[in-house]
Length: 114
Image (cartoon, rainbow, N blue to C red; front, side):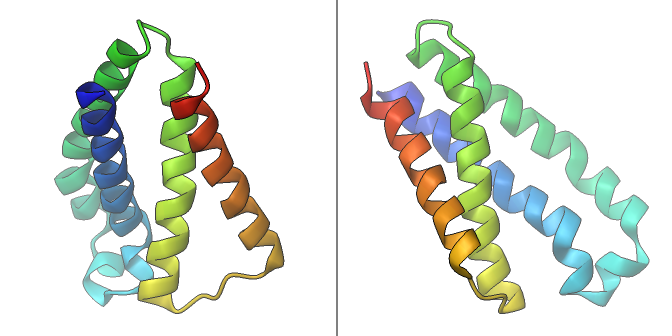
């Protein structure tokens, strides 16, 4: 369980950083003016976090990669929704709300269904 918690935590941190890297241009003018520098500053770190998170989650699931893929995707959807709401004040409509529920169900299936 320790590997699962650590791996999912790295997925969440990676998703927060990738949101800042790709969507920061809509929040901070400096990001919009310096996309190459932003990509160079964050790309390697974000990739490394995803790699380590993937390894930890795969170890928890006895080497299976699919659970980690679903967990990474679902955490990305949830983080994107939260960050977009908090930093860009973009509301959550019915379609987005249903998608978030599906993402939460996907996480539950991967973690609790043995």
